[in-house]
Amino acid sequence: MPLPRPALLALVLGAAGAAAAQPRDAAEQRAYVEGRFVRALTFHAVGDDGAAAAALDEVLALRPDDPAVYDARAEVALARGEAADALFYAERAAALAPASADVRLGLARALDRAGRPVEAVEAAEAARSLAPDDPAVWEELAGLYARAGRGDAEREALAAGVRLHDTAAARLRLSALYERAGDAEAALDAARAAQRLAPDDPTARRRVAALAAPPRPDATADAAPPAAEGGAVGGEAAVGQTAEGGAESVDALLATVEADPRRLDVWARALQALAASGDPRAGAVADDALLLFPAVPAVATPAAEAYFAAGRPADARRAAERARAALDAQGDAPDADDLRARLDRVLAATDG
Image (cartoon, rainbow, N blue to C red; front, side):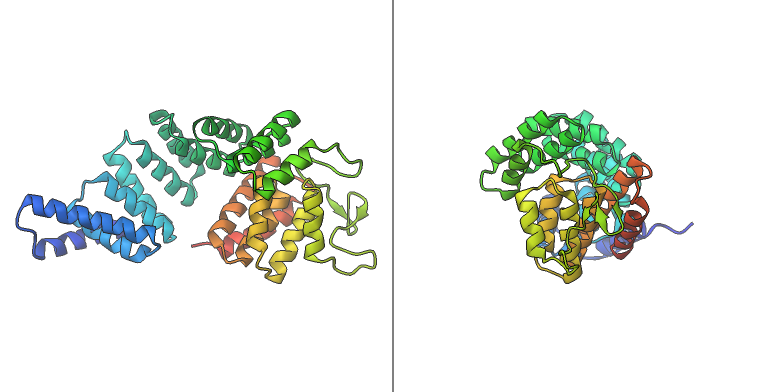
């Protein structure tokens, strides 16, 4: 059976390394390898992942049993969109260092990108067992639970994570999850915590204002907007259309969600309009929308489209995967087929 491409590459590089001039002694060779490893990490940090991959391949030829090098090589492969190669290197790293939480977390990321979500969660849970005090583990686990549509588990992971390393983004996600679970008081407490951590963040301010305000008779904070019927949403004239039937401006839509961030239907229409027009604000508005409603398909779907239109395909794919998982967990919502079709288009456009 032919060798996998990464294994074949390692053999070729090993042969080439043996033929090349080698450092004179073990200390000199160790210094050379460590220098190349640091250089590879530097290349990766500045976004030159082609050079990082080449440097790491050279290091692997000289140090073929170092789990840290395999782990770094898997991370670079993920950055290059090479999911199969990333999984090969991550599995090799895990085999060499089964008790390393960092390596297990790298394996979880590679499995997730390879389309193996159940195994990805298992790997992240193994990392949690190895390093329960590492906030990065809880953050990764929360994201995997979200993509699997496991809202309760995501909420618990985020709550554990913020006890170790509190961030406004995590608090906003917690706020949205508490609201979806029907715990308005906890949702407001989390939003206020986000505002304390980031007092100048307009998203946190909007979230606190929305949750603290008395409910409007014509507004809803449900996890998904009612289905459109005959060009209307919930019996009202469709948002995004003027009374004369003309298109409402994106600025007007954004002003509406600024005044009342609970209007999920308006978030969706604003994101669709931004994506359709190629507006440079598309990515930033999608960021705000998903901080407030990270797993609501009616919002995450146009957010994925907005990310793609803004030239952020990786974010588009992550948003689409999360929305698809949430749809599958919800069952047959009235607009599920349309949302799935749109998500499939984003996933197809960002594949590889």
